[in-house]
Length: 85
Image (cartoon, rainbow, N blue to C red; front, side, top):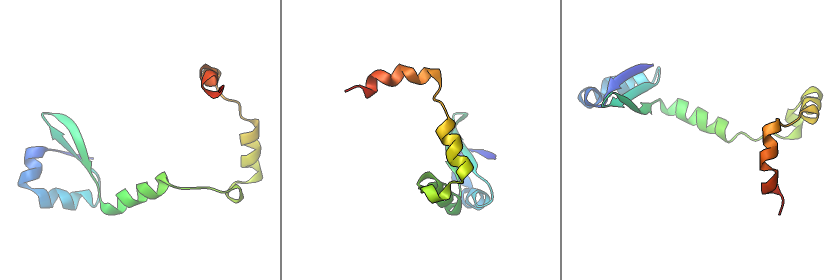
């Protein structure tokens, strides 16, 4: 990932916009990462993944068996009180 200061970004915005089409560009301010610039295509791809909904037909029988056989971690018991009305 390319890293650039906010001052450098302001001076050469077009250059870094073009770079962001190929790979994310990290923009820093006072030496600390503040924002990431990425292509619109990559942003929309990530948003689609964020909202992906699966139906039972999307799972293989092996997937379903693995889910049924799974056990929550012991730490999950800490939240049992939240489930009791």
